[in-house]
Image 1 (tube, helix red, strand yellow):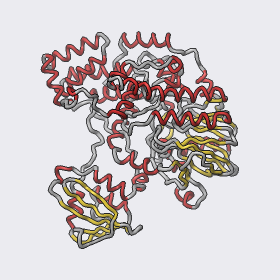
Image 2 (image 1 turned 60 degrees about the horizontal axis):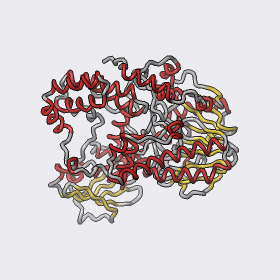
Image 3 (image 1 turned 90 degrees about the vertical axis):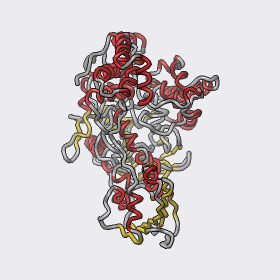
Length: 625
């Protein structure tokens, strides 16, 4: 269904933003253009089958007069993030930006080039490397560095190297300690739910345009090509650790538990350049991303930024990151990193101060002004994370989901709460009437609350669905935060057109192949349909032929427990011998006949265990019951 125009209330709010925000400061545009060498024309990247996996040209409309359906501050950020091409950071260090959600960086060594963060997809990383080589020469890849464990920083690795090169020792792969464990577990344990919500967060299924997706704040969107991983060959474990790669010395600073569970910064003395991974970018980042993740620690985040300033600032001429554009000059670098530090520290400290005065997370977030210096700094604005949901994240980190009010301790879920509210307010038609009044008054938040209850009472009520979609659309138009905009507009789209499902899955074959047996059995355990398994009592030994390891799986009371033990046919109902751990994943997916799995003992034991594993739903409802 067609989108609606912005309301007069939204247009008036955007005019006010134009007069109150520091749009005369164009420093970011100068920095984003600095060092430009060449663009990709057209900037459309396809897979081998011709499918488009990246289309930066779709954002050409950002250079035109854009209507008031986009917050002017978000429009400014999207114009910056949509700039694409090869850029010189400093002689010897180059970035390709605008080819994916993240940046890929090339550091020239004695014989080849070190690649930092090879994007999400094989195809986009390969296109970026080709552009670099076209302009800088056909240098061989001499190493790959993953700054941290999120997929937009490793998923395209097969576009710049391959497993054979790594196995031969020609291309070391360097990452922070714990990288592979976190990279795999994040994309598998809650991967289906995260991917579904990420489709909302990044607006992947929205049309690109003034009434739809205009970016993500951190970049424009996620590419949709092949995702892979190559296991690191060098784990960096300690701050101050140095390694010389292809003649280039690199000094590392560990930053675990910040933007990612495994993350690191590093410094190149040869180039006087500091890479801050994703801990200092040109926006407020997430302490709890809307797609779902563990709550991050802003106190540690701020502390590692202070340590970076103290350790590197006096010998640094440029700081760059895995997103956005660099910052040059010692004084500007210190100011930039200090403000980023103050941003996360202020969110942490003031939320703690207020919660200790008895305020709840939602109360604290509703009125939380930042210091004037942070309000004036464009890079402290909430284009990706937001003050509102980050404050709630800090509250959650320390206090959990419950706000202490006993009246909210055991509330009805939405499907039960909605009908009760609707009845109390006078029925569905009356609720929609009240929501229409709120919509016409520009109180879109209250309208959305009312219509949420209405749709959870009767998801097929046409007037409620239509007005709810219109309401979410206006909330999207008014949002400075790109991920909020994408959530609102995705909800409106699904109300109008039905579920669009999940744009893609990050649990690719190469990621699944890196699951340890323990992680694989954990994945099985969280898939057990407990009630269906209550009466089962199963003990199965699983032996891996390639390693000789044996694991005992027991399923009792709906709980799957795994232990590494010596195989014992006398106490196991069945023993399964696997040529490869991936064969067990295939078995769980329903393949019980392919070679590679030898079962001794009770042939039904493993089948009964696998038979109670639930299948995740990548199209579960979000905005409807």
